[in-house]
Image (cartoon, rainbow, N blue to C red; front, side):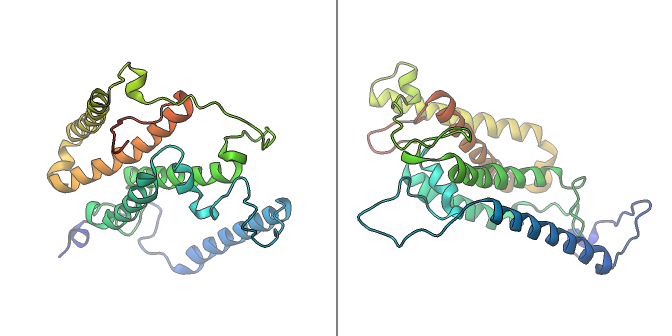
Length: 253
């Protein structure tokens, strides 16, 4: 017998143990579908999106944007090297989603995924989906103008806007000019971030470690730290003009 089957069923006062799909679920889904259809209809009427002329290889649009569902990855290219934004990040997204059933083995809440039962799981998923995907798509669609410059909603998209390149690497900001010491300093910052984050999480989740296991817990922590690290790097680039954390002659992170 599985853990989910062996878990005792709890009854909530005032709520029947079983509910029919009709009308409780179907009615709610139908109302949600109506709201979405109305919202899309209004949006399609309000937003002007005319068809453009056929692609002209001699005239490149400024900015050249990918389809909206790839704009999140395209925007990540501003903050990371192509090898990370174009290869590592998509692989981590796909592999992370595939690992969810193997990492989240807690039977609590099976069959009724309520916020009360799965607070951490829901918050982590919402953070990854809304912040690391939807927010970047919104930035790419509405805030990235000519030259892929960042424009606020009230600003005019001036194609002649020039932005001074004042970005510096984190080791440079701390006075390290040599490649060797820059790599050592940047590597130390990354190791400290992952080391302290991993140790703190293990300390705070000592009870969960016994039921989940070391390997599952370690993988969950690393994926969570990478998600947080992407946001931290975006904030450093936009707010403090920090380009790279670790700089080497061959690869920069």
